[in-house]
Image 1 (cartoon, rainbow, N blue to C red):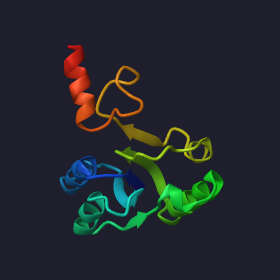
Image 2 (image 1 turned 30 degrees about the vertical axis):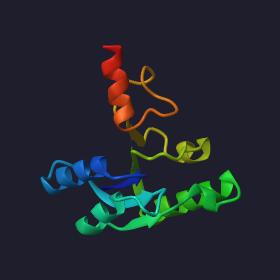
Image 3 (image 1 turned 45 degrees about the horizontal axis):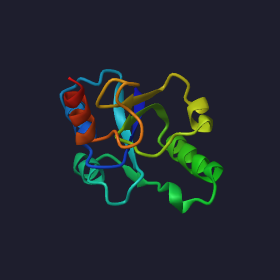
Image 4 (image 1 turned 90 degrees about the vertical axis):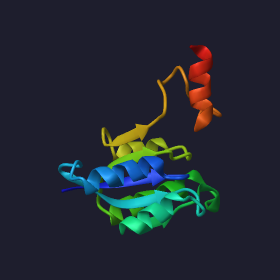
Length: 135
């Protein structure tokens, strides 16, 4: 069975959708093995706890260099034997070093069409407002 690592930064509504799908038996061949949050106050951590999913906190600014952060993230992914990474509202940039270790095994959940509605400030309600404004 494929272990899925879900990376989060906020409320965790996408994580909850994945948890609900898992509980309904819809994640065929996979299961959520861990949640990694870039913020210690992310409500997604509560969702993981309630679902009995191990959760970790890894804050980029706690590391002086990108390479140190990458190493810590890769160690967590290896500890949980992650075979698939889901970026579910994860607001920290994933480096080439991490992407290179997980080729074709990273999925980013984004609330709009890319590249039409992405970049700085395009998250949460702002994305939907921009889409409606554009028509």
